[in-house]
Structures are given as structure tokens and as C-alpha cells.
Amino acid sequence: GAWLELLRALGADSADGPRTLDAAVLAGHFAGAIADGDPRGELVRFGALCGEVTFASWRTETHLRVRGRSDGGLLLPAALLVALADGPRPRAEPLALRAFAARDGDRAEAARQLLLAGGPRRTHTLRALLHADDELRLVAIDALVRGNAAEQLPDIVAAAAPGLPLATAAATDALLALWPGASPAVRQRTRGAIARSTNSELRRLDPGQELAAGAAPPPGAATDSGNARLLLVLLVSGLALYGFWLRERCGARPN
Image (cartoon, rainbow, N blue to C red; front, side):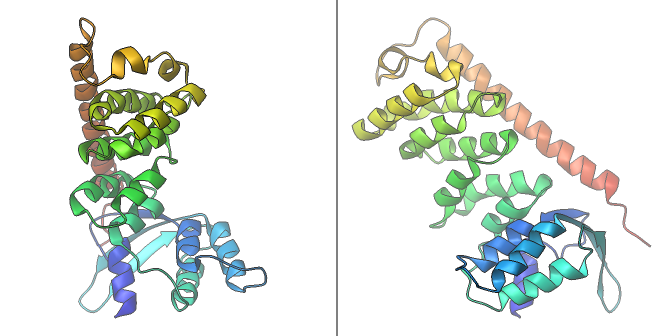
């Protein structure tokens, strides 16, 4: 029963198409904090050597069959999870686990679903995803904005690092959307985050003029903000559709 729960949490019992999971992330998640000399540390190291596990599954009359590969094959990462899951570990929340460990289109989809799922770890997970790649940072920022998480503005600003155009555009839009509902303390921390930012686009923003609550926006600002939001929505939708198309294209089920 515990293993079926784990497979369902990962979406690994689905026969809908190929999946890719990061074995190192899964091993670290289930191992938790490790002291020096703990043998689970070796298991996590082996998980890192396995790299990404890509597999497809399909059902027969009697079995769920799996075919795939990783740098450690299929048996080694499965055995690692068996060993690590037998020890003490935090209860896996399916959406958070998929958002952390997936390396395919399911990762962004799980991050988007976190907003609807709620739960005590929702904001914690989205804040952690602000350290992911550019596309996932955009999804996490958009979810935080939709959740009116104004207290996360300093972290959102910090996520807009140079060379990440999607996160930069999303963070700029988040500043305009969340600033009116931010507390004075959050605004002060956000100004400090903008001042420390190495992103020249964000540093050009003047909180006293553009972000002050109730201040009239300059001509064309509302239109530009609306256009930016529309472009972000279209971009996220396009990326999601591309991920689904790629899974269908590559996921022809074996006979």
C-alpha cells in the first residue's frame, strides 16, 4: 500500500505517456537531513549518479510493464527509493513532489496546480521553485501573484536574475500587481531587494513613483502591463501545449 501511494504521488503508475524524473532529487527528498556517516548518504550519491530516469509504462492483463533508461538503468533508482522510503521521511505531497522531481512538462503543470490545491506547503513549494529554471520561475511567480502572496515580493524580485527574461517580465508584473496590497514592512524589504538586484531592468524601477499605492501610472503603463500579462499567459499556454504535444509524439505505446 505504501509503495502504491508513492507510485501514484509520482505519477509513475500512469500509462498516459513517457515520464522523466530526477533520481537525485527523489533520493534527497526521501533521505531528508543526513548526518556524517549515515549510510543513506551513499544511497543519495548513487541517486545522483543515476541522473534523469526516463520511462514509459503500459498495462497488460496482469501487469504494469515499464520500459526506460537512466545512467543507472531502471533497477538501481527503483532499489534506491525502496531503501530510502523505508526510513523516516516527510509525507510526500504529490504536487510538490512532482514539481521538484519532474523533468518534463509535468513539472510546470504541477506548479500551476499548486495554486488550486492549496495546503500548508503550497507557498513554501512555490517559493522554492523561484530558484528553478527560467520557465519554472515564471510559472511560480504567476501562481504567487494569482494567490495574492504580496509577502513574497522580496523573493520574487530576487528570482529575476540577469539572463532570465521570463522571470524578469513576470517579476515586473508582480511588482505592479502585488504592491498595493503589501504591508509597509514588505515594501521596505522589496525596495531593499530591488536595490541589491543585479538585474538592470528591475533596478530602473522607482518604487516611490511607479509602485506607490494609489499613484497614477504614467501614460500607457496600464496598457503595457495588460499586454505583458497577456503575453505571459499566451507563453505559458504555448509551453504547456508544446509539452503535451511532445509527450504524445514521443510516447507511442508499445504493442
